[in-house]
Image 1 (cartoon, rainbow, N blue to C red):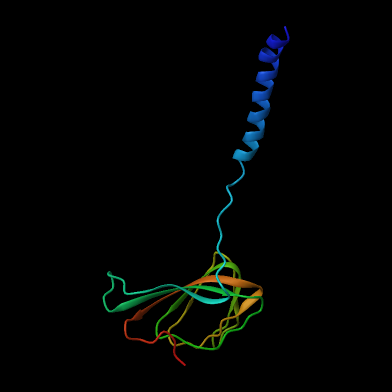
Image 2: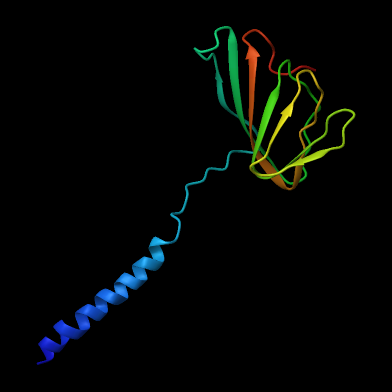
Length: 140
């Protein structure tokens, strides 16, 4: 009789319990792998794209610590900034500084001097530039 009790009552209850537990886990998002690059600009691509002969595609993973400030500089072409984490503070000459938050973008015009600045929690951003192949990456 005990075997019959276990089969008819305990196994269905066990299945119900396991199903309820696994259902809770199924609703949780899977953990995402993350990589934190070293502090500073980290090269991702510096290549000649086949679709744009004579040009150079430059992609950088920028990681700055809290309230970090870089050196003023400019580029011969536009710079496209996409913030992943933290905040970037972008100040262009003649304009109020703008806070760029995660998921937001900012385009820095060509040959405009700008200074990289991180917010109070630092910043992680992807920076993209397309240059003519012979142009320098930065201008003094």
